Image: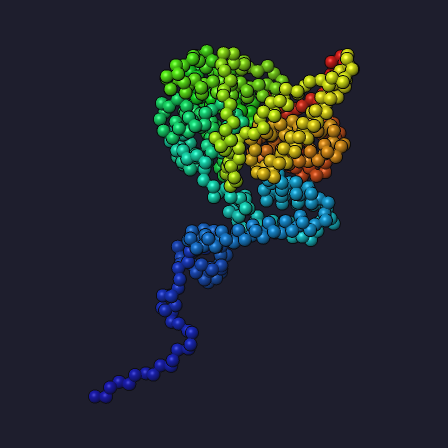
Length: 548
């Protein structure tokens, strides 16, 4: 029987694969388009994909949803390259442009403006100056617009060359059992480190070492830490944080602190008095003026209770001695901040000077208390220097010039006016040093008060170059503070409106710093209860003491 003959097949063309082999070699993709996701189809991962082309439908592929490590790193690298390119272009523009508005743009950048804010200024304030724009500046505007439209992730504020995320918190503490708002120990450690860096050295009525010791212990029975104190510190520190949820989290901490204070029902302990002091300053910086006055009254009562309950401890009783020393520190610290606030408000302080308590001891051990500008990487600094020279100089403040003729106050008032302007220029110079050392992104909240006071003092004397230069420099710092505290934002708006009312033309270099304040609802009103927003200048009179 003859064997059947096999049919000879033609060889396959080079590079052509069968359908089955093609399907077997198809690679998995990290993400599918929206249509394939909805229909649960295998997506090719391209844009447009094979299925969408076959069905003639619009293909939408969001690459940011690819959670694979390689894809995420690739996107992050691309975003960093875009940031670097944008930075180089902007620096090149500022360096090479002959545009007279470049200095205004530079001052806005110095005030720690975000990329969207810089772009908004260029688009709105320089919109009618196309003839003065250089090609480089126009290219930067277009690049910023493209950068903002690349997706929600790239629109988030990114800080170039910022080492913040590489710095560990100075103090490691735990969230529980102190706060119910978050269980994130790292986040709580970050906020506590911020507060102890930027607030505590200047509002010193809390013993840092004992507070941290008791917070780390986790005991609710401790003497120097409590949930109320921790939550109000976290609320106050949120203004210094740059996280996307910092403001919202700060409000949650603030509300939790108020709830815990209500539970005290008038029972004031040491940590309660300390917490009310923080809550008081926090309320004023966030323009919660009525709450602030209530907390001030509660604070005065709490300090009075502490003063009356203070007794001399036995030197052998370490715990009692420790408690007495911290109580002494707390009473004097709260009295100091009350006096500072009273001077600003031009009111009689509710907290009276401690009569029976000795002044807290002062140590000038240069190695005992270093200061780090957390969260940036920088070398440690001495926490206090030249204090003795300041004490000697402070004794001469307000002394009349002996060369003035008897019976005439006008030369004396002129001397005071010059002292006021000289002090404002000195504050400007100090802020210039501060900005060159650490930037103006973060500053002690009390500093913004003196910056705004100096701005008001200079406002009516801008006809001299040295005063105008000081005003420009202080405006940069005030603008940076306005991005963190509503009080500073309203104060900056009040400076602008006062200049308009007085008919004073502010330096053109500061125009972008005040540009976005016009017509804002949250800045259109100043507090009727806190006179911190105005400074009345000393006018020379004929000696009758009346104000002109």
